Image 1: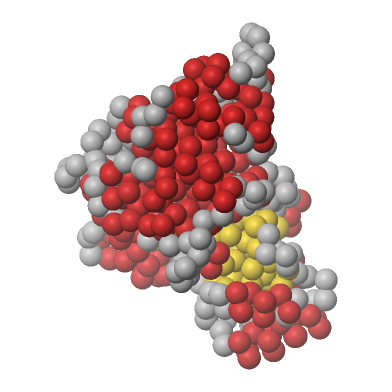
Image 2: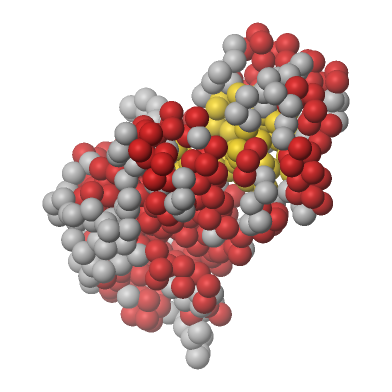
Length: 468
């Protein structure tokens, strides 16, 4: 785990990632009151017919949406990929009746997915929906390194697929992309394309469980070698049900659902690091912090190994805790300990909660790039610790109490108020695909949803870079 924590301090970052970060920065100069609308954001606030006319000759940059990201779990409940989609909010009806608008939204989604390619972990996959009319997009083969699975959506399944679809699918498969279909046995589209399918997607939000069972049995009989993916699984019971039906993957967000953890206590190893974090926030002398570190041999060893790692480029080996603290500095030490506190004994590189926390922290830090260093650090800490209760399984207020975090950080996490709350709201809205909430946060930050979604994807690519 320590090998990737060095990346948290901006050391030896690839040039392409640095360029992305600089291009993605929003106009956040101070998280205060409302700002004027961003000039690059042409809202789809006109009447549907007018908006469709305007968009008929437009580009993907003229529309806006909120990215929805959901973990894909395997049979062992390990995160092995993501489902991504683009929520278009109140303009869903317009998308439903306009092929041109559907293709514009698909283009925007493809733009965002391309950002993940350079740092993508080879063992993970991406599932995303794509309109039939978007299959000819020339950028799709570039998504093959994502282990991409394209779920093809049709305007109606009662008609045969377009001739171009039958020609394009084989070429996409040769490029390394996989094709998924929502099963509708007997429909012209499904029967014409089922032989090309690499997976079938069962939507648990739109079909009764009994119907899903019958459909899974029929698919297993007709297509015994084609995997099935469960989508929109809402709880652990549905997940287990899907796995028993033979689904190899399930898209779900219940791992981030909060429970009733009253009475639970923080584990001793976390309390020790929390005490050290509290000392740093309490402006204790470095000598006192060093003395506390020395009482934990394992933690002292980790700190020395980190400070002497190649990423830090020390000309000579650092052999004492006091030297390490002087070289590292108070704020980097706080960030380093924060990540250790969050990770605990978990396998951080493979933990979806840890990854989500990193993405939140990095995203918020980037949104505040024009702020002072101390405020950017606070933004990072706000994002990381906003999920701490899910890791420790204790009430959030109790999880934060030993850390002695600053009042703005606590106010944002616990009450959704204060200067850091808009950036946290934007990060959460990006994860959940909540366009209304994202718009509200963007209004306070002085930016627009498309730019913030880009920051989110850059942050996800950054998190993957750390685990590469």
